[in-house]
Structure formats: structure tokens, C-alpha cells
Image (cartoon, rainbow, N blue to C red):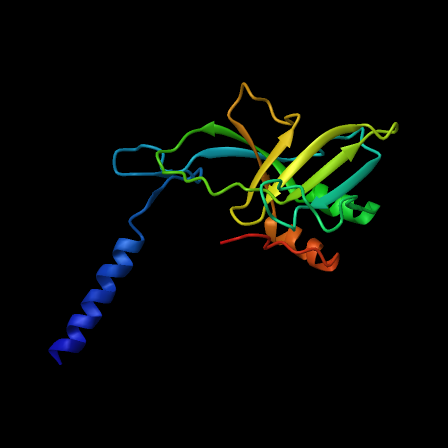
Length: 174
């Protein structure tokens, strides 16, 4: 009987503690000292290089020191549906107010390179993707470097697209 009562009381305490997070009506999380726990962000969809008329995916799947070594060195030109799916998975995040949470970076050893070309077939931009740590970089930058902005991708969506293209996403992931 005592163990059942202990279990019951423990459950009540755990439920009470789970509800102790101080979330204000605007949805921001605050700790007991009214400090922001999570960053407040603005998220926008982004078309990184709108002048591009051709988008090409290169997968560095051979390994070695040159990450761009590929079994298909000319890459794969994406069709309009794939370009639309890729673009829909990219977003720009602007940090409006920083929180006090820890952040961690991953490996960022990209093996997927999305190259954007203009109507003269000149390279105008390059997005590097690391499916291992879900990191992303764009060259030239498509974010405002003077603001607290970064790129983000919907990697689950990208993985589905790559799978439909028979392109591996787990290249050299440890």
C-alpha cells in the first residue's frame, strides 16, 4: 500500500515540475530570473540565387582530401521540380533576441554541393550541405553578415528528394 502511495505522489510531483516552465503569453520561454532561455527568431523562406537558370548537384562520394571528388564529376542538373523542392527547404533565420541556451556545432564536412549557374553558364553561387551534422554554407553569402542571421535547411525534406534521385546522403558520416 505504501509503495502505491509513493508512486502516486511521485507522479504528482513530476507532473507539477513538468508544468513549472515559465512560458509567457507571447510564447517566449523564461527562467525563474526572467531571462530568455530560447532565442527569439524570425524565419523566412529564401531563394538563394534567383538569377540562376541552371542548378547542379555534385556529391563528393569518393572520399579523400578533396571533398568534391565524385563518381559523377559533372554532377546532376536538377529539374524544375527538384529546384522548387530544394528552394522550399531553405530558410534564412534572423536572431532577434538571444537566449542563454548552449549551442553546439557539428562536423561540417560537406559532401553535397549545389551549384547555381547564370544564363551564360557562369557559376554564381554554391551551397554546401553536410547531411552528417546538418550544416549549410553558401558562397557568396546569401544572408546579411552584419546581422545575426544564418541559413537553415529542412534536411528531412532534402533527404527524401535525394532518395528519389538515388543520391546518398550518408557519405562519410561517422
